[in-house]
Amino acid sequence: MSLDQRLLDVLVCPECHGTLTLVKDELLCNKCPLAYEVRGGIPIMLVESARRRS
Image (cartoon, rainbow, N blue to C red; front, side, top):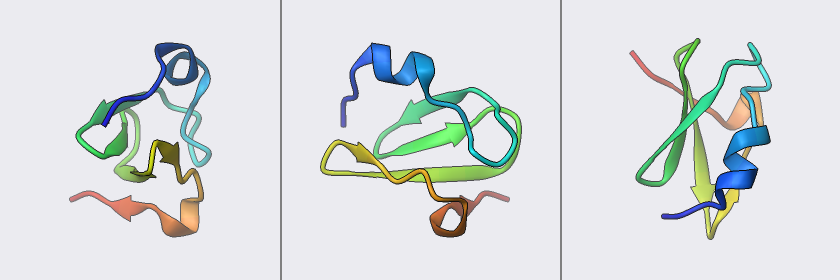
């Protein structure tokens, strides 16, 4: 999965405002344990839809 770098530069975690790293089909927060799915090139940036990493 690929996202435009300009989009990645402005997106932050809606929960803690941490930066995000794209790994496969997810955006992983670098500050808290949330991971946001990317579906069809569109990041799903809803905290209630995020996966909590352990």
